[in-house]
Image 1 (cartoon, rainbow, N blue to C red):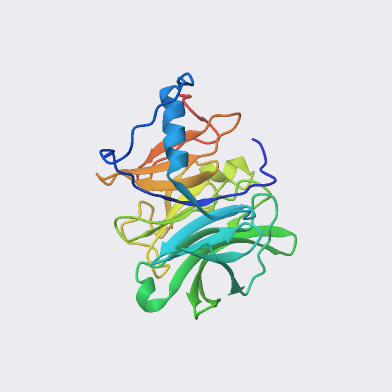
Image 2 (image 1 turned 90 degrees about the horizontal axis):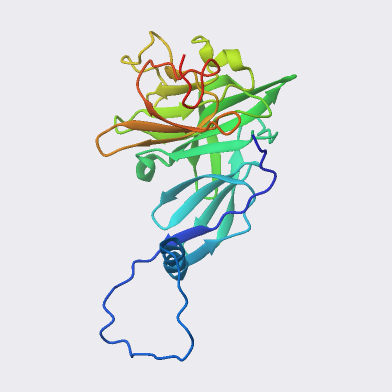
Length: 272
């Protein structure tokens, strides 16, 4: 798996365009018409309708929108607010544990509370070091204007490492939090249901364990994951996750409660 050592992201707004050209003047040219493939035509059309909002960010990892602002985490530890006119403001982030930017670890997932307009709360996922060990944790934070304060640790000591930290936080259609964790390069942990590594976790908004989780008194929703870093739901409620595989065996999985997704016993399209 290739390690990303540098990355720049452009935040973009896709602007709708009209197909009514009745008032546009006809233009003629003697130059030969250039033939483009369908893929090239779609790329050209997209470029013509893209506005650059911000650029030259440093390993941006997660993004959340509220009204006319975008909140963006950078893996190095910065939380940014980007306004609709492109102004970037560095948000002060006061945590009880120092963010450790090590390999793929750092300031990762960000999710605004569904009642953010009333409580100014958000959730973050970040890496830290304790002695000679590396962990990840999910923290509830509160915004008081230009700074954020740690309110409560919701889950702690998720195994971490230089690689495979997971880190995505999403809100499900059931108003539960879903959190991805990597195997922290300890493959066997993905199959260990007592470990938080190599899992997709599910919790209530206040950090408690939902009564209908598949395993008794456990945050674990599914296991056998290598490094899941994307979650979404279809219109019919089906849950999907993207997962970084080994030797290009990346996966898109339909996630079901309590299911084992095979790592490290099987990966990709392999079968037992």
